[in-house]
Each structure stands twice: as structure tokens, then as C-alpha cells.
Length: 106
Image (cartoon, rainbow, N blue to C red; front, side, top):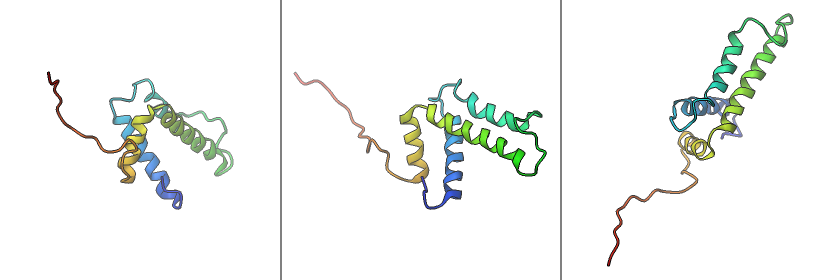
């Protein structure tokens, strides 16, 4: 979303995950993926014990990042595109929506 600013891109990814978690079009079972990643952070057992400062936290960060990116990848593509467009301020990839009425003429 913001390739020139990695900190801003990370914030936008988190905003995207929050928006997708709130969206009713995203299936409930998919919303378990980021919740599971967050639960891993507070779970007392780690894949790598926190013996060396920084090394033990890397597995926590890795699980969180993989969980969030997996969640985004599994969400319906059109919903993700809609939220990305809203976050970045870009026009929606499908263009403008035209609202109107129609009738059949005889």
C-alpha cells in the first residue's frame, strides 16, 4: 500500500485486518486466524524459548505476521480490495457505482 514507507505500510495492514474483522461479509471461521495468532502471543509456551533477548520474540512476531497475512489472503478478494481502496483513498478497482431504476418498455 505504501512501498516507500514500511512503517506506514505496517499500520495500513493492521487497519486492513481490523476492517476485515468487522466486516460481516468475511466468514466467521476466517476471523479465527488472527485471533489464534494473537492468542499465541499470550500463550505461555513458545516455539523458541525467550532465553536470548530478541530471539525468542522473533517467533512471536513471525507467527503474528504470518497469521495476519494468511487472514488477508483467505478473505474474499473483492472485500479486501474495497477496504484497501478505502484505506489508501484510491478509487475502488471496479470503478464508480451508478445507482438508478429500470423498467421494461412494451
